Length: 108
Image (cartoon, rainbow, N blue to C red; front, side, top):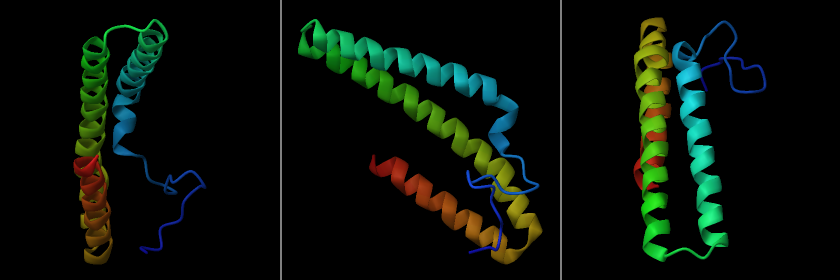
């Protein structure tokens, strides 16, 4: 543990997350993905063709991957770089945290 305090939601005191500059873009993409999920539900309810549903699942998966990669990029360029500048221990902890996130993304 790096000794960083959080506000109960994971936000570090005095630290702004790298994605905040593009928060509106991310929210727009996530709302679009939410719409895709509702569309998938409708397709199943309407008993549409399996391959058509799978095609839409693939599109939604790619959209989620794009959001994930954008957030990861911003995390690496902002949070990890800031932690590395703050000190070796903090930098190593942020890199380890990022690697764990990358591992989860790759395995999903």
